[in-house]
Image (cartoon, rainbow, N blue to C red; front, side):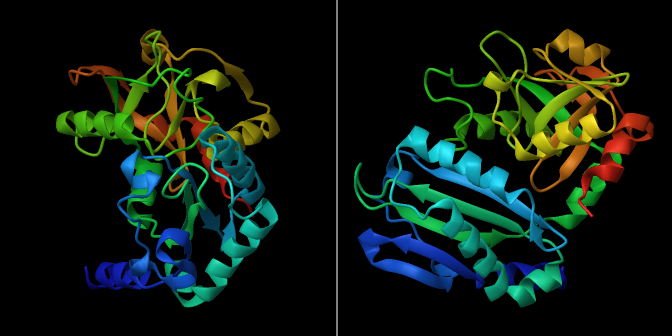
Length: 304
């Protein structure tokens, strides 16, 4: 407990990069001094582009892929006046360097950057880059024993509202799905339905179904283009595992050999049980840690 409190205190005071013209902030400052004004559109209307990354061996994982997705999100939410990708890469590296003692103590850290339009459309953007703590104990447990999943009644906003390739902080639907899931099953993550009744993703994970030597992902237009999911698809190709896209229905989940979960902090893990919205067990994957394909992918997941 003492070590956890010390870690939390160190993250609270680590050096973050924060630009907020409306309150004359521009540069490096302690993380606990980062504050969003209540008249900023990121607070008033939830207009916030975000990108979450992590390190492996102290190096940002697939940084260029994250920066490409970030650029696409900024276009969707019409936020300009933020540093270009090459400058962002330098800011991220400087954040790691300025906090080298913390990074060394934690071994691996998360990295978050976010931006809002500022106080009105067309105003100077609010922008931040900071580190975040990874719960390594939870990561290890989920990778070894899995995590429960609940298929919730909460439906993804239609793509006509905003395209799903945008990673934003308008996440009430994810929050409600997880709240419902955890009211039924401790530590569960809630998977969102699509308008057609198929299943998409959760707040922390892209999902995919394993059947034999095949992995089925949701169609690209249905989900956020997860960077961890992209990495798993690349690994599958290297391991001669068939990859396909199809709608992930309840029936397909019930017939699958495993459900993969993929996300930034935890990397690659799996569902140990899948429940419906009333907690009925649809699929019991408790023995999936012995699944040869899952083991292959997990062993190859972390870059050398």
